[in-house]
Image 1 (tube, rainbow, N blue to C red):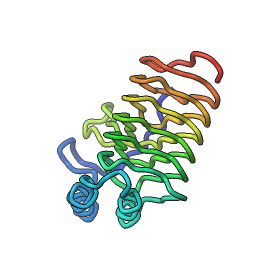
Image 2: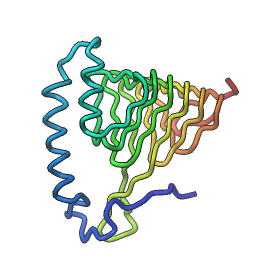
Image 3: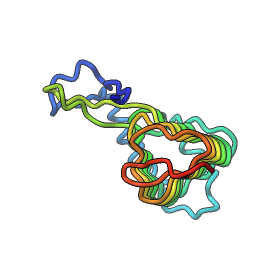
Image 4: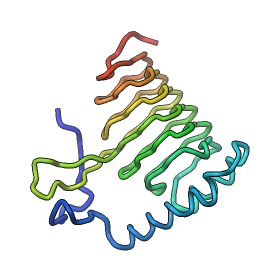
Length: 185
């Protein structure tokens, strides 16, 4: 079953053309300057400062999540973080499309959440995106890779270095490449 990928710009004329409007590109550039300059060097206890900068750039933040200073966030205006969720050290939220991380969910170090891909069936190879949802109380171990359009169910645990290519139901342990359900939690 194909992923529910949506083109960022259906009118993208060629593979070398940007799918982003000029105003979006300027905002992306500003974000790429501000995060390392104002947040990348901060100590862990300065979480509220990092959350402030995420809010300034349009992230939807509910409660008090934790975002590590070395986490990478592509487009914060596509990110939703719920209370006590955690985006760990060097975790990469490649948020070309929407990413939602549920309450008390943990995205461990060096995990990669990729909402973007390309449609190679078209000559222009347009950028396509699909939302990633991490459910409440879910845990993604170190270096997990999550593909576009995937939902990890509430209270599920994904083992380290797994590649999640399809939805994971609630209350399971899953691991592997590709990720598969190992047992109920």
